[in-house]
Length: 294
Image (cartoon, rainbow, N blue to C red; front, side, top):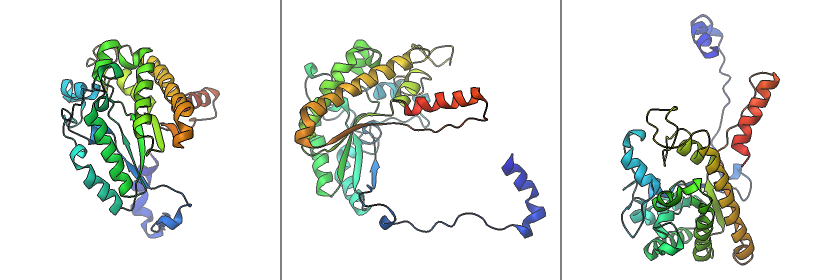
């Protein structure tokens, strides 16, 4: 309403208007503290492409985008994406030209473990791809920041036991994480276990807008399977336990020798109460806890 009133009164007071917008000058590196890292980021399914190449297994995002194209804004999928699988050298060169310090990317779980678990076999082509990517980044002066899980769960684990709805995921994620630490940790010094666990739980299991697209039928006629009242909490719980298992393995077996860091990426939204009313204050606190409290 404030903006509407301003626009209505503008013709009456235009001669008195003074530009009070802050004048922001150009920024450069010297405006930031020493050690500040400039970088960019991506996720495997959104960037790599080559969905059926190099021995990669199917992920839940492959299934979701092909089964429910109407849930994607332009009906597209990640079969080709921006083809980073074939063009990673160009990507690294571009980032170097931009004078960046780091590149955060995610590993496609099903590209190195097509069946999602060690017993299903390790895909050497996938290992080679990430080795080559990491080496190319380092050769161009870029630090690799590696995310282990950016929502593209191997479809085989979803089919076998429901993925992050089951405690069985904890051991499989731990094994996958340790394979990555063991294989890439000599060069990767920054690890991220999970990308935005809130987003995965909410959009994958509460409203069904993202893979695996589970939600209650009372929420939307497009929902098939799922329980929006319980499944988001189950997936949140097992994501946290999987995160803890991976962090424990890294800290007890690899951190001292590899001298790296490990953490988690959160989606952060800050909430303030509408008024000083205690109910509004509690609501804001509860909403903030859902964002920060992982």
